[in-house]
Amino acid sequence: MGEILRLLDETYPKADCALHHRNAWELLAATILSAQCTDKRVNEVTPALFQKYPTMRDFAAVSQAELAQDIRSTGFFNNKAKSLIGAAKKIVGEFGGKVPRTMDDLLTVPGAARKTANVVLGTAYGIAEGVVVDTHVQRIAQRLGLTRNSDPKRIEQDLMAVLPREKWIKFSHQVILHGRALCIARKPKCAECPLNGVCRAKDKTA
Ligand code: SF4
Image 1 (cartoon, protein in one colour):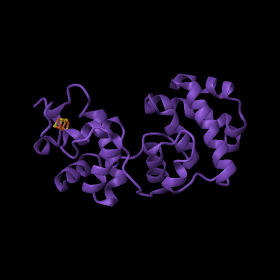
Image 2 (image 1 turned 90 degrees about the horizontal axis):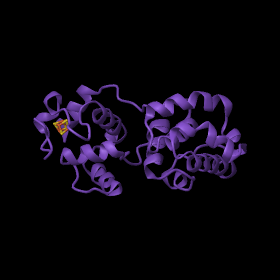
Image 3 (image 1 turned 90 degrees about the vertical axis):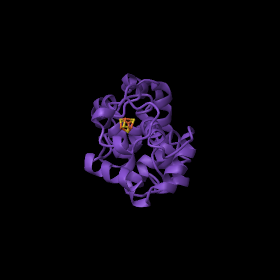
């Protein structure tokens, strides 16, 4: 594990969240929008969105139909609009307009499942409550032999067991970059991969 972490630090020293945001609410909203959508597309949509609705209260007040049109290009826009409005109403109504700082509270917010909660806690607040497991982390944890599970919750438990807690947040950022750059789902670029020497993946290409 130590060598994997060392190589990730060496290769992706500045890894951070790719979703543009200025505060915890914007990160939560951007993360909800990123479901089944690229971060790039979300980053194209959010500047105008946060200009039109500068605060959480603006999201709580808009109609679902209008918000859905504003986020149309991110896909699943009706569901996402419902989640955004529901999340804003919940946080304004029950948490005094402040995005909660605990996993238990965040999981009560519409649209925020464990992955989203981990993104918000880790990136907005620097709180390591868990490990973000998205499709890249899922695939690469398996390839690197860090888990034998395929269920994201179990993969997260496996990663929490093998990673030192101070790496929980950064590890996901690094692995997500690695998944985009080299360890892509189909035909990973193993010949160029700095982790080649420590990787025993069955679908290695070199
Ligand atoms: S060697 Fe290939 S499969 Fe293993 S981590 Fe690198 S890119 Fe991924």
